[in-house]
Image (cartoon, rainbow, N blue to C red; front, side):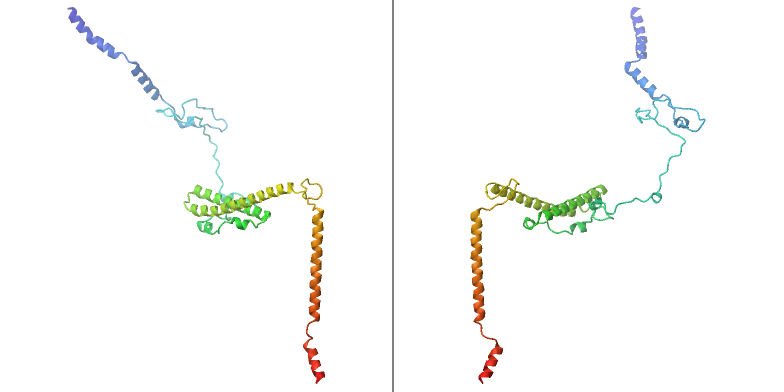
Length: 272
């Protein structure tokens, strides 16, 4: 009897346990309920009327614009009104832009029509200046040549940037070859100026140990000694003496010359 009653109770207990919701099923049911909540997407609620007498219909939904599945979307407030949107003006209606024809920024481009030189134009260049050629240039010439090279490198860099921005795909090798020759010239200018700086340093050290040179900046910078002046005067006397001797020899040779042909003819006629 008791055994029969116990066996009869077991199915009912199992059904009762099955009807009790588990924590995981409760969480899933809450998520499904939140995903199926109604959300207003009507057009009147999205538009904000600004004409006189319009009623205020501000949308109070904090979930406006978010995805119903992922709960993501816009994080700023949306606003639409009846005001007409401005239309951009055409290029023909815009006023002309005044540009200075002598502006220094024009030197960054090869000409006024293009932003980058063609490969044929970049290949039209000579070799760079050698150090032996630059040694004979003055400071002013080296200064001008340096800034010509700087402007040329800026022009080459501008063209390279425009080619990369426009994805042109050509002219890179020719521009690099031109830039290489410009850098050779600039390297030669630095070499020559370094040599002159070292020569100037050596001259200063030599002048500091020379008693005839005064580097204080007061009075004469170079004052020769007395024996040098006497030696120079003696050399000048010798030169004057040699010049006088040469002049005397020239006069003696002129006196010993043969008479002109006319005199000889007259002498022959008188003798006959």
